View (cartoon, helix red, strand yellow):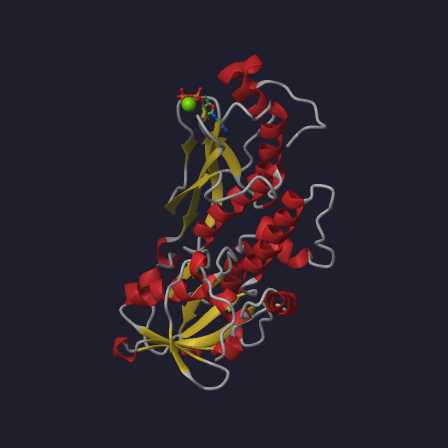
Length: 350
Ligand code: ADP
Ligand code: MG
């Protein structure tokens, strides 16, 4: 890592020098930011709006692998996955804090790359970086992002509001991030066996990007507002469709029926899943990291969503005693189960 590049030892700068170096050109833009970096705490003002706060912790070796995740992408993704939680409340993200723990293997140039990625995400999504913390780490890289946003009290969407008869909708397409990860893992193994072989990711840009450079769906929150749709419940898809639907159903005390044939899967995800001997539907259900929005709307709003290309209706909410099921393409009933991605199975016959 960083072998061919300039290396500036972090000890040369010290903690305050590093913070100053990383943050000196950061200027807040949002009107809700009264005070950003530089004091003991940031000061924010959301006037009559409700404040939303969400935190994620990312640990090297647990949540990311620096052997195939470029540092700039890591910074970008760390911000995106956090903003996604604010959008999942139907809110607008406006600030983040970005905290970092660095082991001695990281030169200044590495930290600069992480910040470059984080700041690109902030700029793109109109979010101010208003603080953080910086520390040495005994082992590995640690990143923690807290995102802050706002929403009208009457527009907050919780996981627990699904109503019987609601249509279950999902944005974008699913499974791509997981299949992209399989591709990166394969190339990593090949590289470790023979470092002279360059990764072969040709033509797979979409799914590799789904894994390395996810985009939180602020556009969907805006689209829903524009179409005058207020979901009854919403969650972002970080752990896979099955687990997210089960969260909504459990918290809302409801059941659901989703239809395998309706689950949106990109053709590249579909084909590449088969190359790996994986069932594309299982990748969508249990893969995770797609950062799409899953939400339920009253049936009476069907006309508002039916023409929207980026939103797919995949099923409906039922009474709780009906359970939570997926109807397969061959019309069989499969109870939905929340699987972590470690338990993803190879393709089985239906
Ligand atoms: P404290 O001792 O109160 O934790 P610091 O010296 O760590 O203060 O931080 C000084 C300022 O720099 C604060 O505004 C803090 O939010 C900001 N800051 C520290 N680390 C980071 C970072 N990694 N990214 C952005 N801002 C940071
Ligand atoms: Mg500090």
